Image (cartoon, rainbow, N blue to C red; front, side):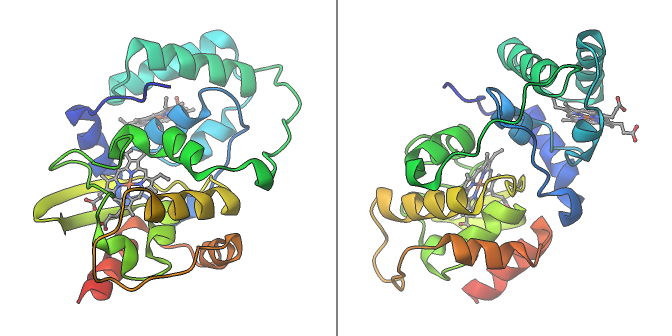
Length: 233
Ligand code: HEC
Ligand code: HEC
């Protein structure tokens, strides 16, 4: 799947969303093709409560909702828009299919979770976009504390960062809709895929249990940034 390309206007919208509270961060929508675009695009200005509450809208009503989001500033390609509409009309329309079964943990592969949920911003090989999306390849922050990358995925992160000498000041949305198994798998994938900087402590793999524990104390994206500051002192 070709992810959404970097888009400065969208990034501006993401910055506006930096104050979003953790309360709505973990809202899950029914699984279906296109749901990942909803998670990554529709939380820039508000959490997914609005989207979930709108369940049952007709096809014409969803089209007009998405068009009004574009008026508010949502930047979306025609292709992503039609994928999102198809998703909303199918899964949050008047006749949704019965809930599909959860992906069994055994089939989870961190690379797939990465490709579907992270690569659009951080790049397929974790190289990032200088000034906009920090690299995860060769990033020593990932090894500073066992739980830090888990906190970022669960809650997002927002505030000034310096990574490998390059400054960032953006906002990553919370991806707490991912399951404990998916988050553990993707963090382990990131830590083991692109080599590691020398020096930092080594950890065993993140377990789904650790993710579940961290999920019980939701943070805002700004609080995760504060955790990072403290961790790197
Ligand atoms: C650029 C900011 C922005 C983005 C991105 C955004 N929205 Fe919204 N959304 C808003 C605003 C502003 C409101 C109105 C809030 C209010 O009336 O209190 C809203 C409200 C809603 C509502 C409530 C019903 C309504 O029309 O007021 C729904 C449903 C909704 N958005 C769905 C979506 C979906 C689906 C996406 C992703 C395709 C999305 N939004 C992305 C800004 C945005
Ligand atoms: C919509 C874009 C987007 C997506 C999707 C995204 N990120 Fe991020 N991520 C960012 C941005 C932007 C930052 C930097 C935020 C800042 O400047 O405070 C970031 C920061 C991070 C950091 C902190 C890096 C550091 O050095 O402190 C980690 C870890 C991270 N992301 C992991 C992930 C993982 C894993 C996924 C997928 C599960 C993911 N991200 C998906 C945009 C994204």
